[in-house]
Length: 306
Image (cartoon, rainbow, N blue to C red; front, side, top):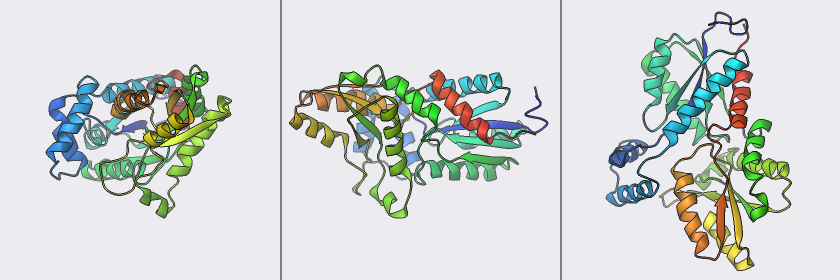
């Protein structure tokens, strides 16, 4: 179906996520892909396998992303934009190249691509850009790709996070978190550090918080320095200060996955408990109506009226 806004131009939206294994048996292949084919140390495989086993043996990321895409397609249609919404993963099935083949075969001419990471870094979101362009070339897709670089301060994103935080905000000290990246990104002037802290500040303001903190989580398994402070170091400081209740609000993630279900719900909660601190976290956005409305607003900014 083509409406007056869409005209004869075949447009679509592509949501991009990191990807995660759905079976313990796939973890070694998954890690090998992330490491560009390099051998994976057995100790690393076992460590990651134990983490996935602790959350039930698989990641819900694929299901969450599928639901986001389906909800976004419905939301856009209700706004007068009946466009197809595809979803693809950078590091697991459905791989970006696999989905680009479908986009090519469907005859899509203009594709609005949105990475499901609100804050921009060349090392993270920029890599999705490159992989998608490589897939376009490899598949021979004749499609114009229009990128959404960042939506870290979009009012509806802020509102979505605030809705999840508001019911818990009075239960303890609020600690916002985002995924850490190597410190070297600061040398190139990347906006990531400023953007994640801006998202945290806007959500805090929306919830009327007078005191809150920010930390980086899920540092990589490498020897180089990563952005901090770490969540663990902040929890240590809280324990010394006599803070006994903490509300952790991950504002760098939009879906349940290993860095929420294990890093926060298992590792950080246990670390806090051993220091006499009760730690709770906000629900992930997943396919919450306000977050889907945010994605729809971001997509509509790039869709072309013809």
